[in-house]
Image 1 (cartoon, rainbow, N blue to C red):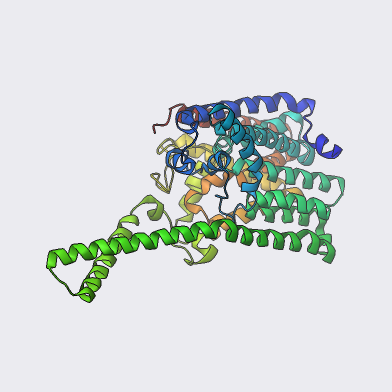
Image 2 (cartoon, rainbow, N blue to C red):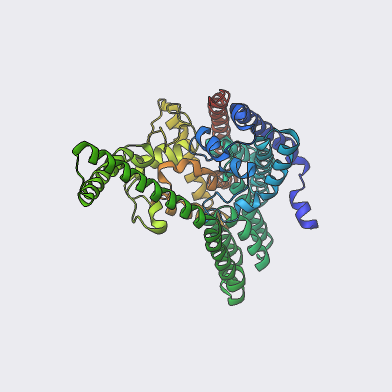
Length: 482
């Protein structure tokens, strides 16, 4: 317990920079609360419909608001297996306040979690740069601030989704791994299991990054039968079994109820069509009426299908590898090059003014281009810092750990196409690799080259902070209409 307390104890040199970033995040959270407080603070309503139908910040989902207001397993259980249960204590606290006041404080309750995770994400990012990469205080602070200047880290800190929680847990994992690399230690089985449980519990795919951390720290010892079994195979099997149980317990009853309602509505619609056709033709033959009604119903269903395929939800989704199982989430047709330029290293890092924070599955085109050359110049500088940092740190094991995490995400998004049509909203899962790489760049330079690199990093950070904060704050400052 003492080690955990020391881990979260804020050091003197971290205090003022972390408070400055916390203040920026607090302003964004306050604006997000202001934007939706007129709609989301009421009690005794259908929370899911109110939150999902009204929340509009890019492609982020307000599922957490619904769960904290009235607890239920609403996240996709195969992607976020433990997240609903992590929110249960918050839901209890929120419920007590609602009963006592008649006011739903869900935005404030969730904001407390966002602020905590944002604050310690900055702390751990700075510690990684300071203690693992080995940068001086000023450079470590600069590059940690750079992380929070990126658009979809800044936004993740103020919206009720899971991304800032994931960022916090990933940076915690990387910090623990980095310090063990530096000290020549190794990750014990119980540490790996604990980090895997919380990280994969929030986002299942991120659990792989915990195993990558253990692999890079432990080396060949990772493959020892005892460690491989206790730290990798058993927890993976257990969390998968839990996903299956969760699906049977919570998801299948809802699906069965929905399917029964659909079948009942189908019978009702066919019966109405049959009566209308019989009345219009004067036919009394029940078999003929049934055949005609079914033919008209199928025609109606096909017309609805064609109409629905024009909606952004379907029109912006590329063709999957397969329509069954997990492969239904893949995408082989969305253009990769444009996605990398405009979304992956574009929107993730700096917002587009056109279609500002619109949802790709509602109104935003998949590809939006910047109207200013300055935006592409800034993106080029980010890519240059990243590439130069990778070259300078190419012999550093910790950088290769971070790059392996990045490569895993790129295999998911650009390779399989998972979430590629809104890949920018997942930036918090990998954007940390850019300041880490830039840290190795600064560490590898000296003299005038170091001064120039610092100036470029500082100017880029200042630009991204001002540009993204201005657009995000301006969007959130306008109250949502019900």
